[in-house]
Image (cartoon, rainbow, N blue to C red; front, side, top):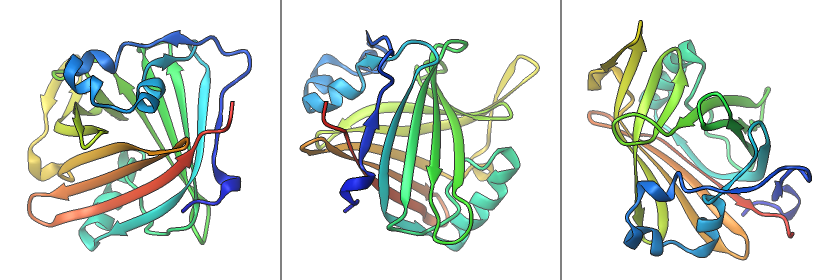
Amino acid sequence: MASARSHRLSTPSNARLRDDHRFRALLSAEDWGRLPVSIWRRFSTRLADGATVIYVGEIEHAQLSRAGWWFALAARLIGGPLPTSADTGVPMIVAVTEDAASGGQIWTRICGRIHGFPQVIHSAKRFAGPTGLEEYLGWGLSMSLRVCVADGALEFRSTGYAIAFAGLRCPLPSWLTPGDVVVTHSDLGEGAFRFTLEITHPRFGRIISQSAVFREASS
């Protein structure tokens, strides 16, 4: 469990909040109604363009197979979107910034490590693509995501990868990808929530697994 001093949600005092229907529109009314109210609130509040919300927590679980480590190493060629460490008990910071240019969100993750500098991972959630939501990783590479609800948690499941070049969008063959990605946002009650990442390769099985617990600051 993350320490109390490392759990915080920081919203700029001058930020302009707006209702956000972008995530809710990706689910049926029935599925949206199965989520806890706290998840509704986190995914229904939109900051003014350029404003940032910061979540601070702690990595409680991490596994990285040998194949996962090689995929994470290779991914550094496009900016390093995969975790390269299996350290636990270290801080993790997530900053979500509204992106006026794309109408989406820029996600910056800072993962602490026991030795060396923290790893910084950048990506952007764009409300585009064949499923209505994609994670843009840089260098023209994107991952389409399907949003669903399972056991009262919000899940983002990959449905395919593509690379854009010269105005063309080309799907990537499965052997060039790390496999199926599942990101889960689950509420723990009393302001705490967990983000879990799992990547499963069709040949090598689960290659990367990571979860971190965060807590919102009292308003």
